[in-house]
Length: 314
Image (cartoon, rainbow, N blue to C red; front, side, top):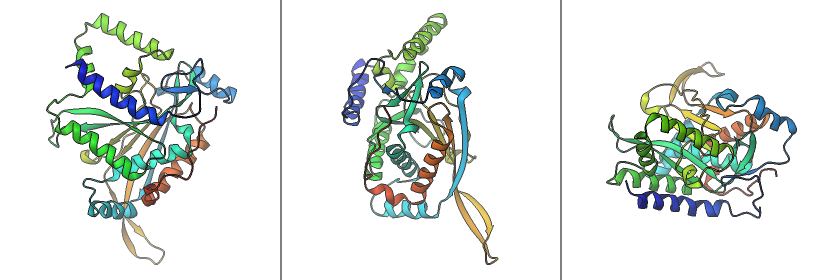
């Protein structure tokens, strides 16, 4: 491992963030490097962070599905237009990024019993070095603009995944950091982790660590398709501040009876969403899920930027 490699990756991520955080907002006392404190929330929202002290103890679990016919047609269309490996993952990430641009409340997070609006959109996912069963795997984090189109999302994801898979080094910067931590003796490791939690609670954890950490961000997304199982309801992590975890599976076939009495074979895209109940209410989440489904059913809407990006409350 070299410090230079880690520094280069961190610098790239920081440069990506500079665009995303370039707003008229001026940082105030109580804000964090990765988010601004929300000061006009309903008092109950603030009290709830003490009543529900952990992220895993504040989970809401959603399960849903959409007819995949239009999405499949769109995916094949894009592949024929010269976008190799374009798939459901790109559409789902695009749908979530676009939903954040209109429902920014789902991009909040809780740290230190306070609720923050995240400064950018950070999506993490596991990526294998090759398609072999025992191939090395790492977590890759993508940082998107709220007005990103499906083409920009595809380009960034393809580039970063390709860089990892083609690199001679099998470890990402995050893997190297974990590798170093693995050699710390247990008593010191416990102290190190407790120190990181304490720093994170107060908003003092170094930004370069949160840029590397998959435990900090807007969303962690995982595919069960290659495993051939239904999407799990993945737990949220108490460490860090990721408020949403999405899992999806391979296409599910289901026989259905039409109004005319005919039996048809329908194909569905199943997905689950685990959310932190403290960042916004159920009605807001339900509205956001409806938006996600709208974009999954009509992915062509993601080809142009949104007319307006909605900013979260102050």
